[in-house]
Length: 281
Image (cartoon, rainbow, N blue to C red):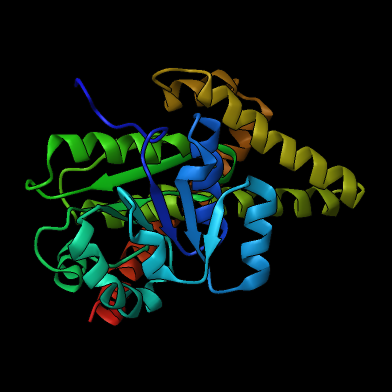
């Protein structure tokens, strides 16, 4: 699109300077964004100093000042703080009408729209922890009123941290939260349990942890190396008939692993909906 703004040429403000904000800032800078175009509003002074030191960006304790000239505003605060923060920002957002991207779990787009007022474009986003190293998986949602320009801009900003996909229904964001948003913790827990089992079988704890961590990392790299990962095929390729892997996978099946994973993801999605009910007032 001729004349289209890009993250390297626009002013971006992040409200909240926690880990997710750091991941987004790092991703933007890695994609060529100008650090003088990025401002993070963070109430904690040590946090602000760390951001300045690590990224060379502008920081402030004043949320309103941060968004005053921003083309994109990223809301990176906890769900329980979102209502208070956004309502206070509403007059400034109405003045500039920037693209607003929320990365908070549970808070629905219509509620955000009610808080900021009509005419301010809203995108819901659910990134995950690997965004901190540019290996994230992010789901995006916006209603049909979002312009094609803002849709592209939201995708450009959030894809700076890794894979970025749009979902058709806002309810799908709850499923994204359960799958990729919370998902890294599932793999960390599995690796943790594998290391503990290795220790129980006689390995030294340090050796077991290193092997489990590298197995997790290596499996992820194998998947990432394929443009269209065929997970069942990849699993089959390391599962020799009558071998050790087949014995382990059969044990998983006998213990109800499939049902457990489905129940766990359902619990995460349910909690996402509960957060909307709890903090979306």
